[in-house]
Image 1 (cartoon, rainbow, N blue to C red):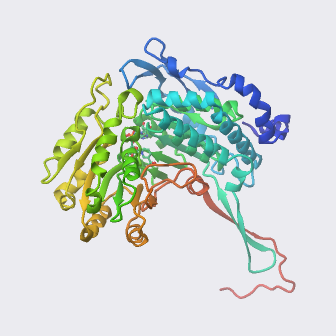
Image 2 (image 1 turned 120 degrees about the horizontal axis):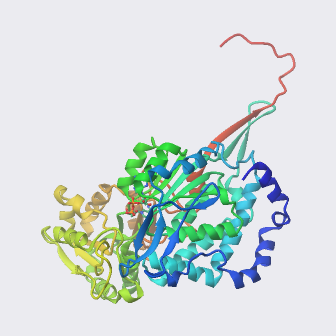
Image 3 (image 1 turned 45 degrees about the vertical axis):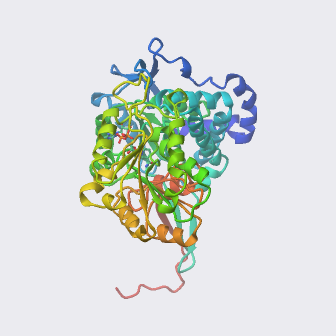
Length: 555
Ligand SMILES: NC(=O)c1ccc[n+]([C@@H]2O[C@H](COP(=O)([O-])OP(=O)(O)OC[C@H]3O[C@@H](n4cnc5c(N)ncnc54)[C@H](O)[C@@H]3O)[C@@H](O)[C@H]2O)c1
């Protein structure tokens, strides 16, 4: 949008309204036409009525000649056609990013009205996601492409809506709050500002098709950047629809570019367009490649091998068993925060915990998607991994370890029952086993081990050797135990206390890895400021020069 157009928008009566005026004025019409933005019907997408996903660049929805067909993860039908840009088609995206200067679309000295615009857009979009018809639409659309239970999918929409509500009104401008420090003499003051990077890129994976891209994209926009967004094509239909909702809520068409492509094409786009910052959420392998290719101009939310320790104090076995089951197997274990390893104090082995974990896992079924397709690991790969683990002395299969029954999940995806393999703690630490045991299996799969009172150091040694430090849980109400474990570990999102869990990335607390200077965060004001802005100091020194001042000797 040009300066002229922007001024026109802000002189328009709509822009003089407050966000809440606007929300109330649209409430009635939204209830009737709340899906006016949508171009697909979540439930009706099928092999005979395939949906189409388009690209957005320089303010226009475009197609390429190249259509990637996505198969329904539940039955293998070709149900979505994604218009994918190949390497020959990236020019408009490169040009679009290049048109954004380093100082961004807005900053505290340029178009501050846009902070308010994004407060308004967030208010409207947050409201839209709270309309049952709209939240149901997104929950069902998420379920179609990243199958998970309705409650898990709706949870994703809820968190996204609450996040948007959090940044309504003046909250976007408060993100860019500056501070001042008095100087050494009259007229001098230093001011610290949050400054945008300008052209940026957001790359996100398949498992949270709405929450991760919306939270990161909006953070980028709030701070004044111009993002190009790339979501895994398997699920990009969700963000395509969400962008249409955001446009409906007042987001200027040319503020965000949206590209569907394979990883290689996106990599090329990044090398040519040279975004000043890239936020990558996905596997550590791609993360490390991009960190190298982009000379470190990147922030990462990468793999999670997340652990939970059950401390020596045993309480509320039913509750803790239920949380363990949810952490390991909700969304078929495809949360980056899923519990990958459970360290159980021997006191817990004497309780019904393991039996309850077995029973809770057995309740999960394909019909309600409490267990379902695994989108990045095949059944064969998961079962092979299990077989390798079972060769470790003392290891045993606790439950699962079989393919799901009566399913039509295509063989490119995985379909196994929730699985737990026990491996003795002493064996985990052995050099020849450690890498195998701590390999992230992005599916319903966990390792369980046991430690005795005098073996806590072995547990801490195992944690010290891990390379990913995303989430963790210390299940204990013993403050000295919590202190010992939290003090000797680094995970970025650590829950401590009886109700501790590993999963849970709501909008109200920081979520992200620690122990890596490239680590990003998501969700909170601190995460947005860290990832999407840099510090700029302006030192005002306006004088006056003292009377009688004379040129001093050189120093
Ligand atoms: N830390 C977090 O917050 C978080 C959140 C979700 C998922 N994850 C992690 O993501 C992984 C699962 O997702 P995945 O297997 O689909 O990840 P992935 O790394 O294969 O893909 C992630 C995204 O990167 C794109 N991509 C792939 N190669 C690329 C390249 N060379 N250049 C640019 N883009 C490229 C993909 O198309 C996709 O959109 C797991 O390891 C999981 O732990 C982490």
